Length: 481
Image 1 (cartoon, helix red, strand yellow):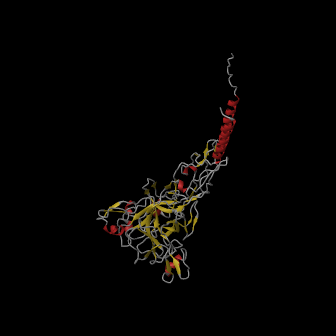
Image 2 (tube, one colour):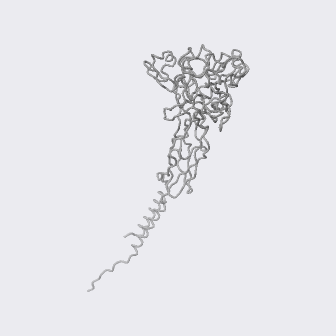
Image 3 (cartoon, rainbow, N blue to C red):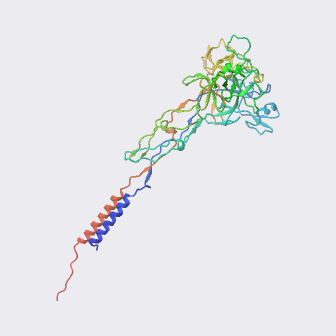
């Protein structure tokens, strides 16, 4: 039987124990929210236009190994396309001496050509090495790429934080090729009425023309410099300065800068349809993006019986990688393409070139998507057709590279196929909840308060003790004599 003093002691002990335990935090009592996000990939290709790049295999030293772009829809005999194919060393010794095994091959029997299928070109320089590939068609976010964020519940609880704020790459597929600017040569004219032939793309370069050299040798000693933003003396380069001015930097008193193509894709000047305006010499973009809370898709998480607050603003994310705006021009005159034409060292009709000046040189036109008369341009129409627009009855269009960079037509190593004249990509994207990495948070559970539990237990035991004390005792039998 419990005595009053004993039951009181038990009650007091339970109250003290319950109070002390109930006052202690229950840190291990957490639950997982439900999952948000499906880890779907999203495209990171910035605006592009597909054309055909060829590799010049013959010609004078300094011309062999050039990559030359053509807007035509056919012409496999013009020269080998830049598609990464392997060639025999024994049959192509001059070309092998220029390219080496930069683009593949064993260096004994075979060597590779540059592979620009589905890739844009970037210039060599700094951390960007000749032949280096980079980028991807799509990206998939990881938890670490999310901004650190939490969600609140109406019960006053807040989830644990998820996200590491790590940047992710927005580089499209690229291949590094030497971008060489002619610092001497023929002075180009902007007048179509000026005498002489077209000078862009030929063996004798136009000053400020930029050629694409896939070779491993240095352009020093030739008429070219790698366009890597070098500062030059105005006094020593007056002709070049008269064409470039300070569009790419410099103090314009004693010096000026060359375009800096290192690690950058080249986009055409002007405002393409639905795109931002590009000004000659403007550098913009970044290779990596850190997602902000404002750019993260709006999403929430729930637990049984309750939904947390939403987080994320869903604003557009920039996909513009490091780029430089220059003038893409197309040859309106020149040799009609035939087999081996790119070994001639002469300008070719329909060839697309790069010019660092602020005008389209004689015999060329800006590659701005202009609509032309078929009747007045029958030779060019026979090459381009309506790959870039037009009604194909009376009109056709030139390539439109305003705000776009060229990529090679063909099937990319990732399986995507691009046709001449096809265009795509975007300057920005709005991510959806499906693009979020599948993730959850942890949040504190809601247990029965421990103090109340022990108080109730103590009161129950006290009541039990009292009921036992008050229970009637059985009568004792007595035997009387």
